[in-house]
Every structure is written in structure tokens, then in C-alpha cells.
Length: 115
Image (spheres, rainbow, N blue to C red):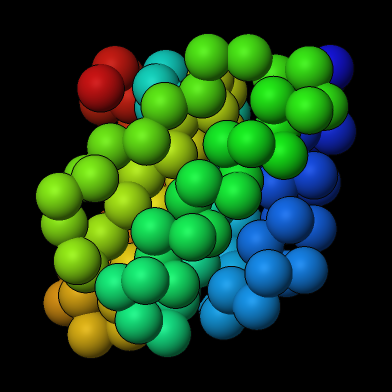
């Protein structure tokens, strides 16, 4: 499955499962860690956990293997590593605090894009 298709599937899965404020950031030419970062909010700790688990299970059904969940012990944040797409699922207050949209939306000079 191509990266653009994985990204689209992730956005749809999050939307179908009531994730809020889904934002996609194109990381091409900004970082080598992934092609896309998707940021979403959940309504509670339980919702964050459910979203991350559903996402991994649905991607596996679609043939995207070996996705991992980071932050299993956190009540405020989960990260799903879907290879070339990184998904952050935050409690709204933590999302506002870290403000990843602002950090990653700024243009970064190419010589600094080696994270």
C-alpha cells in the first residue's frame, strides 16, 4: 500500500471513530522520520486508547503490518507508528500545550531537516 493511501485510511479510521480536530502535516522536505504526521484529539483517556488500538487493528486488516503504539501508560497521549505516517492522538489540553501543528508547519531549511 502506498503512503498516500495509508494516510487516507488513517484519516478515515480516525474520523469514523469520532477523533476530533484531525490535522495532517506533510513532512516531506522537513524530516526523514516520516512522510506525514497526523494529529488528532480524543475526548478521554479511554477514547485515546481505543483510537490507537482500533487504528492499529484496522491498518493490519488492510495489510499494514507491524504498526506500534507508544505511550501505552500515558493518559494524555498516544503515538501510532505506521511506518511512513506518524499519528499523535492527544487529550485536547496536552495537544494545545505541545502545539505540534505550529512546530511542524513552519518551513525548515533543507540542511536542518535531518532529524
